[in-house]
Length: 205
Length: 205
Ligand SMILES: [Zn+2]
Ligand SMILES: [Zn+2]
Image (cartoon, rainbow over all chains, first blue to last red; front, side, top):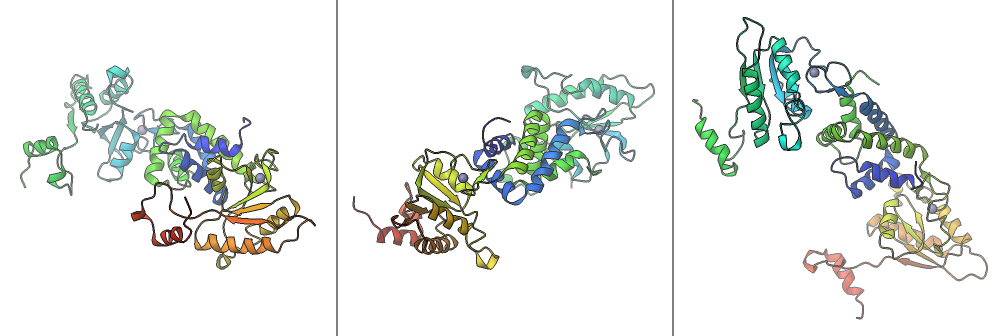
């Protein structure tokens, strides 16, 4: 450790956390020292263990400290459905709805040729292999409704349509999350493009 | 470590930080894993070292990992002035004004008899010894302008007035931070008691 007082080093290090500036880092440091040294020591242990052991699931690329994540290694999860998401946080969000029992694949981003992020960087080679080897019948592309998310979805859709599958198997159904007015959304506050889309895709009730 | 996935443990542990709920903890965990594993490992080291080594300065009670803090061990600091504050954060605030070159004493709270916090808990025995042994000529009581802060200030003032000092030394001057309208403060937004006080303590210009 350098010659800087430890407290300064602590305040500095805490600022590696997203959203934590100098003021909050100071408040955190004082509060941990004063009231929760045990919690801080446990956080140090878990941080160390996590940064060293958490890698990516060999099948879906979600974060896990084992070869396969808890979802991929759960045989009760439906292997016929595969939901493609941008990030591990999206899996957590979808799991929290408890409305999906299939499996996932995490892109860890979106295609972005200008930033050097091509198909390989978002794991599309593994995805193609996974889909052609598994009994997968439906792929839900749940990338964001942004320009990048849409472009990535189109690319994946095209790739999956041309994929070689085990002889005799059905063609894969490729779907996208429904878009429209969010529940509780007031029309006056919804952007025009969402509103046009909701109107065009109106459903019988 | 328990059988819970490490990522869950990480999200849980991060919530020991003040102001960090489940959502921010998740965002922090993902961001560290994705972009700053080295920063996280360094944070773990510094947390460990800090929680184990940071104690209180023998003289002023500020946090330090050495016997005396950097201020108390700095002979250029004026030993004739002693500023009494509630917390280490207050020292940082006063130091940032660069307008004070004396020493400090940290109460680590205020008197609060109902919570069992008496003179000993806020270090008044050490304070009395410090003041009677040192060449201290002025004590600035910089506790908060709250009921507790005021009560503590009055108690300390009474204690210092009755203190035994080296024979022949002057009586100690005891002062309190000036109160009034903050710089840039608009009168319409200032509470009535501050305003009355500012009026009563008006100064010639
Ligand atoms: Zn997995
Ligand atoms: Zn000190």
